[in-house]
Image 1 (cartoon, each protein chain N blue to C red):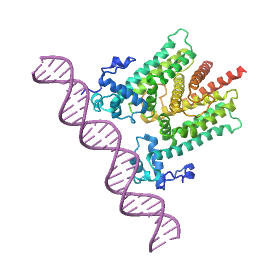
Image 2: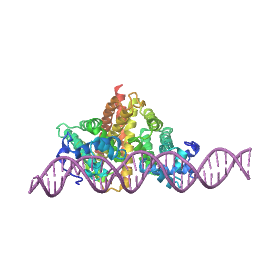
Image 3: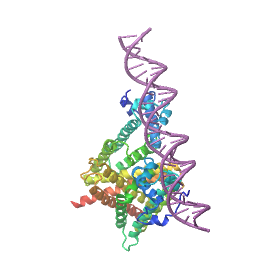
Image 4: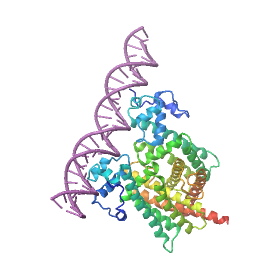
Length: 235
Length: 235
DNA sequence: GTATAAATCAAACGTTCGTTTAAGTCAAGG
DNA sequence: CCTTGACTTAAACGAACGTTTGATTTATAC
């Protein structure tokens, strides 16, 4: 019995996750099911049914259900972190980087990544883990949130030197919180087809998301620049 | 067997929830436990143990566990909605209402309400319900979010006539999303005593929350006024 | 005081769950 | 060919859960 094997480090960075081995079939099936329904709502039996393997295979390869969840979550967090850092670096490595380009690049990558494909469903999983943590705090906070926040705060500082380090982090929180909220609204509305209309544009529709992105970029730019100006005037 | 009895309508509006009747003891015990651990992590046995009554009492008075949860959630949402509407009205009924006073009043009431007392733990429950809905959408969205959002959007419109209705709602979302995020960070850090430091001020500490509130008020004010000015310049 | 309904109680039911066990299959190495 | 170890399989275990039952107690009304 070999649990917690890390033999798929190279594979996890690939876009196409391998599906031949039982171990990987379980990992992929668990990722889909956990993302869709959350940890408690998914039974080991459901996972092994989807992976088309025996019930005991989960305990054989991963020790127990909780450890399988940890493996799924770690693989996902690593991939998502690299995605976000790349989006920030992509703007900052350019010669003519501006605050607006940074915000636009970060937010558009955010919504695209979290709204389609593999990360779409996993976004809910991340939100669930944030509200009801099942894993050690340092995994989510230290290995994902901290590096992304630090990189974005650093970028803000470079483009707006008037900001204090503290202001940079507060602006990062302001930006990210709005994006997380938008993703949640967008995803929830897509799932439930609610007829509720709060706006002329239907809440959660594609038009709504598009307008929201533009709004958030404008809103954050104004807030950050106002903060930048305030500090510069102090001097 | 009388389930779903609404005989405590007057009592629910009182600050001191009655605790003499078995029915109310169950409701109060369930509120505390659901708020702390979520629906699935709380067993009917745990509720009846805390309420010091028999296991079958839950099914006798509320039909089943799910309906008890609905009763708990409805009572809580009604109280919280009135709290928020009062905070907005409290500023707007004044003669010298300004955008900054509105934002400050709303945000400070928000953090105070969600950080201490009865609503402190219930905030997590609301977040869980948002991420993993167990109840019909129109309950949370229609009876809570919609009225609060409409009232705040209306207030923005009054103080910043240059904003379009759509802009008002987008600014409401920007404001609320930042407050929700702050509450979550604050609460999580309080629970876990994480040593992680992202800022000079400790993440999630009282100082951090205080500075964050001031930041959010300033940040939103700048964003809203920039939007207001942009539209006025169009004319 | 007695009849009727409401409320409480201990006990059990049926189901689902995560996990374990022990037998079985298969491929590689000597 | 045989052994060894990795892997798979069917079956069962024990615990926890929501719910139900039927008897018993308490309160209410006549």
